[in-house]
Length: 101
Image 1 (cartoon, helix red, strand yellow):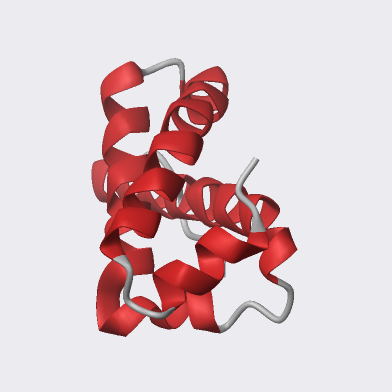
Image 2 (cartoon, one colour; image 1 turned 180 degrees about the vertical axis):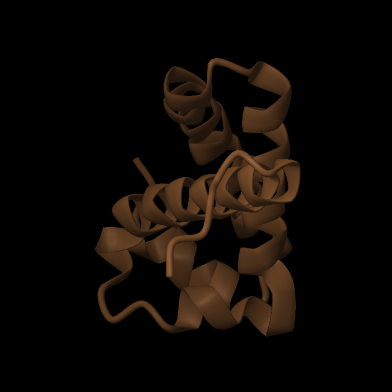
């Protein structure tokens, strides 16, 4: 579990802390997403993209947390949302979803 101290350090710009967070959440998030997608490659890519998102803009996403102890649920929800957005985008592009007026 990621503790609030690591999040605070990462928000403060400590990349070692961010690396520790990555090591903790990455395997769990990939496993979580793989259980939904059934695809390890997609799972790894989505989790990596989410990590990059959390690092962007001087950790803006991390700074938006009101309670650093809620990081893991927030991260997993972000992974799930990112996956579903990708899934919807891919289905729309392949024509599998029909628009209803």
